[in-house]
Image 1 (cartoon, rainbow, N blue to C red):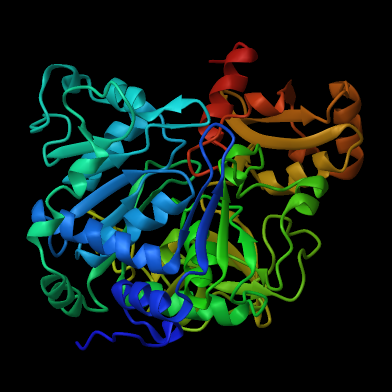
Image 2: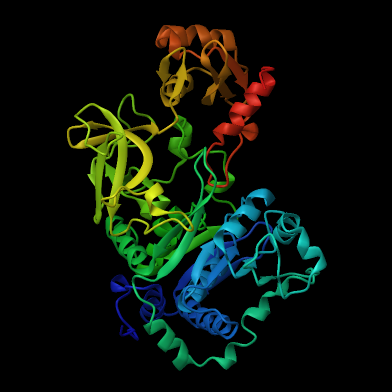
Length: 511
């Protein structure tokens, strides 16, 4: 594979090509800026990104990083995130960004499952000390030196961070580039020339509202294919524009909706310490009208998407279809994907019938780390999304996740339908409907209701109003008031419905 010296960034096939081409094309234009609250402001140009990521890549190579070496990093949005990603990619490694929202118990599972060899940790963000969190997750760090051999994470060999008073087990960030001089620019170019479109670039750890984290793999070619596609679909992204990154880059959305298209076209990615991950806006739930209004305007109404498809694989003509509040309809399918709605035997459902939405295509993940394909893919290569849809002619309407339906007194209830009705009531900001075990009904329908600021809710009045709007079996039998801060969230910014069910059961004396 010939590596271009200064090619068109919009034609890059691998990440090293994108980095070099963007530097040659956009030079000293600012690539990523950072405006801090608790941290100093920062900025890096496209040229600096190329130069510094080359130094980092040479340093990583000198430390033994090569094709397929798995390197994790915990960083918020900003120049350092982009620099780490580029340096790892150029060395041939697999970049594994880890959520800054992750808790200690989750962190242990991700570090062990991901088999990372090295970890780069931001010292602090918004008052959170990530070295402290890491030491809490890995108690063995308290009694070892920097050459790591930890039973909890057996493949991890080194950790680096910044700041003062680091534990003996954690090296300073400068260690990454200290030996860069031993690797020549010529060797780096040869290494980059052997990074192919089918080599793994990225692995994102994600979880749904009911599942443990899983590592979603993506290769250079598909990531660049999706970057080019999304850039073409958003013509407002132009060189020289300063565009805020409202999603964290450790999510696939932050990468392919903001950082990567901006990088390709020469726009500046503007970062702050706070993103949508710091909000109480729950992704994958029925959004309140004011939450919808607060979302940044987009020239495309993106529909359903997931980490496994490198962002949205559909887009819509309208924001909402009456009766289907969770997601815009799947009116159009993105380039490179096929989508079908099928029954339990993978046979297409008839118009108006409910089935699983399945997807396949070039940009679909080639697999999940350490999990057999048979558990997630059909024999003909479609991915089991776990999303359920109804066909309406050429349109697909999203109705919820498989397993989200609550069976109470032999009747199936869609939580989204009830949540939408609850949110139409005066004083209700948001609501989350769950089922808890019940000897008589199988599952008891319960609503966790969040009032608008300064409002007091009368749950009996809510029950009476819902009885006028819904069939009786869809009306929750019990109501528990939550503040917005009490709604438990996963690090993927989705509502932790299992935890809500546990909390409401405890408050109702049914734990």
